[in-house]
Length: 536
Image 1: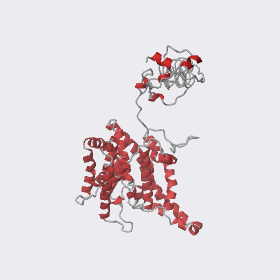
Image 2 (image 1 turned 60 degrees about the vertical axis):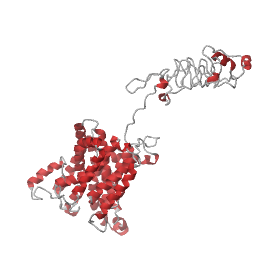
Image 3 (image 1 turned 180 degrees about the horizontal axis):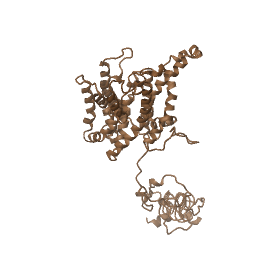
Image 4 (image 1 turned 45 degrees about the vertical axis):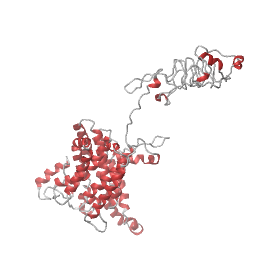
């Protein structure tokens, strides 16, 4: 049966619809005769696509209604509207049928007619501004020109960008765990969440991502971000130690004292500090200087990892699994008792081998190597690694039997345990571009901790030390001594006092991180909530 015969034999009662006006087409994608449930439209097509002078959701001249055998269409589908197929009429026959002609038509139910399928380009699915009439600007990211063939040439989706909120969450949890551990001294905390291994893994992942640029520029950028916050910290701490009685003649080696001060400028080794000072007339403990410089080992290890990262990344790409095991083997050798671990060089080497596998795991994660192995491999291997780390911890000598074995005091056990935990955390990495709804409320705190990570890590020990003279004054208060003794003896009170002191340190010194990163200095980078919208 020819097209003309089929169209003469088929028909539907006419249902008038709302006649459209000659709108101005927003998207250009359908043919001139307005076929399909289209967004497209030819010159002067309606908003959601049509032919010349068309209207509705894609139609033909004078189109209206949902069905139409004689060119009256709203949701068009065939050459002249309707849903296509047997109700479509050729472009040459657009006249209106009389009622008598429609009554004489008979539908042949035995014939199968192939329906016409229209594919809508993905680029046209998104809602846009219906009032905009100017064409889309051309550019390197612009898709192919719209036209009759646009349905087959949909542009590829653009790659995602922005921060990985899952990694931001891990970094914030690591900082919180460090502060809590240094306040309470709970030895089980490093087993629950090995913060240092996680922080080095995240830093290794970011370093591998940055090394897509020239290596020297990346090393210079990373050291520039690291050193200025440390210089500010050193200016305050060194001044305080000198005022409290520390000087060149304290250790009996004046020349070495002046020379070792260079490590406060470039921490290739541990910067010098006072083992014991006067404590500012008894207001602070004599070991306060030794307590506040505890975080400096992290900056020293971080600097060495940054310097060796170009070579480490090449090794990961060539021999990934062998490279991952090299730091663990080095840690086992250094802690076997065959090597004297005293001295600055061995101290640096011990830290480098302890967390080197975590740094390399972060690089492997960024390179996508962990996604190339079967999904069951990491969940199968990681528990065995954790068992090995726990076994090494239990067989190590205990410094304080009352508190039990401390993972932070056993480098080899810490290296193996951190390696197993980081494997699981990176394997489970969901790569959140936006916060899940239960975590949206914590966006402000997590963003603040990530923006001031170095400052929080450096100054939290100072805040904890400064809580002692503050709490001592509360002991001297008669009311607090009589009614709040339970609070004064609690381990939670130093933490509650330290949190405002940490915030004060961020207000005073946190802006240095912005200056080091060449950002506009901000006093307190807590994200503002958009009025009427939830945080994301």
